[in-house]
Image (tube, rainbow, N blue to C red):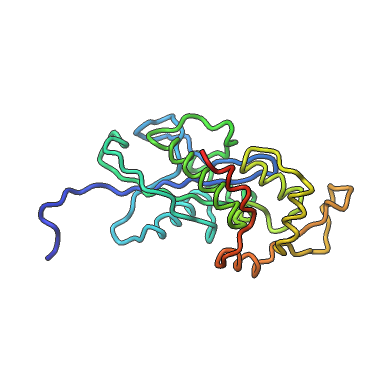
Length: 236
C-alpha cells in the first residue's frame, strides 16, 4: 500500500520561540517578515516539515538557520491546530522553544533573516496565533526553570551570582530576595568556582562561576528540584 486513499493532506509547520538574555532582560528572537503572507509584520521563526525529516531534526534545522547555533536547549511545547490559524492553507504547527546565549549567535545570520532580539516586555503583536504560542512558552519556561536549572542555558560560560539572580528576576518578572536566592543557588552545588573575577565588579560578588555540568545533568535526570517555590509564579 503506497498511500491512504481517503485522507486529506495538510501541511505541518514548526515554529520556534527563541529566548535569550542580555544581562538585563529576557528577550525574544523575532523576524520582520519580508515575504507573504503578512509581509511587514512580526512573527516567530518557522518552516515546514520536510518529507523525510523528524520533528526534532526540523526544529534544530530552523534554530540553526536563524542563529547559526547547534545543540542548544530545545523542547517541544505544544501543537496548534485551529482550522483557520493560517489564512493561506490548512496548516498545523508543532511548536518548540529554545534557550540560547545571545553572544554566541551569528549576527550575520540574523541580519540575513531580518531578525532582531526584542525585549519580551516590548513584544509587538505577532501574526496568526504566534502571540498565544509565546504566552504558552513563557509559562512553560517559568515552570521548568523552577523545577530544573535550565535557566543556566541562557547565561554565558562564566557568570556571576548577581547575573544569575538578574536572569531569574527577568524570567519571572518579579524581584527576588538577593540573599535568599544566592544562598539557595550555592546550596545546589551547581556552581563551580573558576578563580576568576568580573573585572567590572569591585566586590566579591564579582566572582565568576561556571556550571557544574555533572550536577546539572543529575538535576535534569533525577528527582531533585531546583527552586520549586518559583513554580507558583508560572501559573496564569
